[in-house]
Image 1 (cartoon, rainbow, N blue to C red):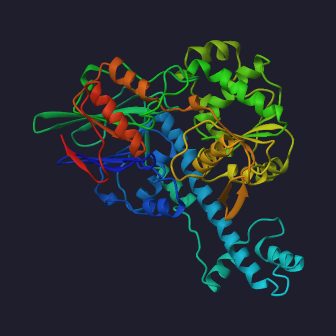
Image 2: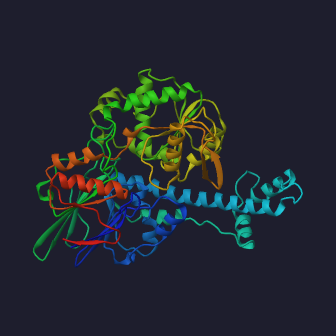
Image 3: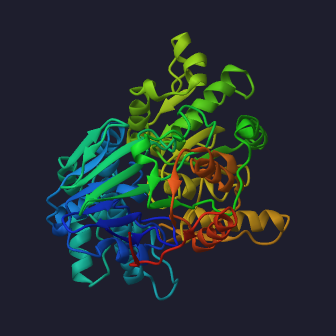
Length: 525
């Protein structure tokens, strides 16, 4: 058996690894790269193998950096099945089409901005060096319909006419919906055939609903080889979900190789017990400034934890009763998915909410924003509120449009509650905001560019570490030490290079044989 590492190798996004035997090739995850637009687009469009060689795909969980290239795989004649937990299959039925819609929508908007800018250049007066209001109105009427929607037909024609560079979506909604017919969902702890002589068993990873530690066993030439894939490991004691599995079936406990994430391999989170009070303090400070609190959030997982904790704080009277908006149609659907799986909730969720006949995620002050018109009205509304919007790393979706209306106002707060990968807009906002705060907010505000325009970052940027759905260094060590797994070797993936290398050094000091592979590297078991 060979394992080849293709994605999330010395970086965080684009999870993808290939297990090969004499008879089978099983892909672990097929995730989307995120980061700089041109670089990530190039990496996402090229698969490192012909999908027709694959037997099946084993999907650890539904987050787009693990599932987001599956429509490409299917479009390129993949003939196997996508095997995952039942909750992951249900979540992907919303996540993948939504990913496609965001790509289509963002491409249309960026193309509109490109054409509009070019037409402005053509109509700029040589005397005033400005575009007249009349010409601006004419250009708007040309590029938009009566209902203020983009006239994509005209925009495409003008891109071709003026030989402008167009942005094309990675895949379409039709591609995503076609991929959904390839999904097979299975329960935890039940072995599933994923190849001729290869079986997989899922165990709860505690990261998001449906996330799994996958144990793959192969019998070849009268020998047995076992590979574990952590996917993304959750934290211990986090709200809603049960902790990562520590008790594995005896036949799955001896691993020749564990492919393990290392997102926070060099860091420690705030204590889970302090999360609620930290959120309360951050929100009280932000609300005192009289502005809007913007929370970029993954629609699946983070948004539900936030709603859960806000419900607790509001029930306790610990915060002013500002309206809370979940401005994410996908987030609304994902909240429904969470509500449909109370069997995986932890003790607190059962005792505090379910036992009292209450939904953990919906209460009087929560508003689920559906239509574009509602979202646009909310973006322009300066009144104090808490707005949770996707995407979590500020790379796409409605959070971008909230930012363009709110990022310049020092009364507003951008509350960072999750990991921001390198080269994402979220990372730039975090780093620029922290540097500006460290300098006493003196001098010109830092400038961030998105949606083809530059914006001064005058809003406060506040980071809360403990909300990560990833275990930190000590929690990942706890998983290794406290579980009944016996591991011969550990390959560290899904971490920025410095994090992975530091975690490998740490684990070697703890007696584990750990290494950090490179992209395309193969190991033989």
